[in-house]
Length: 382
Image 1 (cartoon, rainbow, N blue to C red):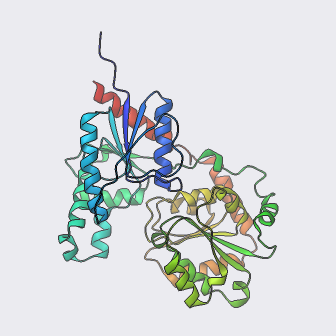
Image 2 (image 1 turned 90 degrees about the horizontal axis):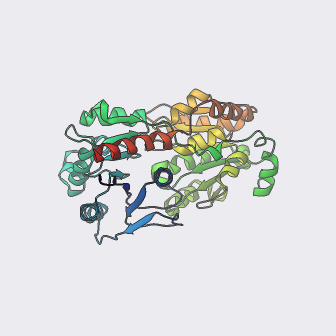
Image 3 (image 1 turned 180 degrees about the vertical axis):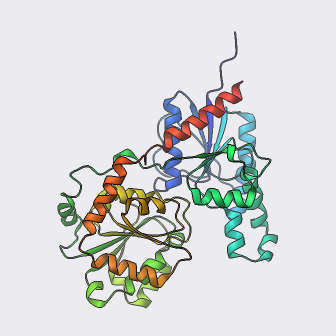
């Protein structure tokens, strides 16, 4: 009799929390694999929120003073765990050596380091470790299969590492099917606004996403402060997500608009807020994908977004908002936000997004990722 095939998969994620896009993608892929009969081991340094039944979560809290030091210790521990309990496939959501499949939800570190730092930065231990870990995934000698979610990022990785095209699998987006707005969404908008406490004449800007600095919250605050007084007096900026709000509150206070900003933390009613608001602002400095852009599009909320975001082209294709070219121009962003708020046809622009989401494949990532993982696991068994 032959040996039973190895049906264990290892999912490797540095930290899990329920509101991160990368984290939600990891969980959806893991649960899809579990539904196909695989046993799932998750190796992480932290897990916040509920643990789905059947997932074996292994925690290790590395003691180190720096992020790269923690990553180095996490990887050393992970290597020992995988050697002791070999899986059929190692699926990583953090760039590191030893991965069979990598989900590319992060920007190219090498490209960012070269753009933002001088040569002396390349002498630092932080740079050397992140560079080595990234090359272990994307370098010419790697065999890691890459789940690529952004064409912009693909070009950057290929430019810096010469990554073989045969290892790159382009993924469709990962919009949860339950985020697609039904025909009742727009008619219910007025009732939702009343429920959420929005006034009839209020203009509601949303900024959604953790890591406020990387998402460009400072840029949104500057745009808010640039509005003429009559428009500013009826405009609110609602900030959804977790992060350190102190520096941004101080900026808003200095600009005289702190009373027009509401920090509401992570929320479970994001679809309702997307339907009820007037405009999503997403002027990110870095964003490999940006699932919130598709969530807004599918809920009929127009978007103003920086062109660096991986999913920004979908907004342009749907004609459901405004994509600003790089390099980012704050004055242009200010003017675009003002002009959008002053338009009388935002609802029509939002409908274009809903129609686009219904006819395009914005929900197929999990199935595509599952196919790659299963292929790698099968090859390992032969």
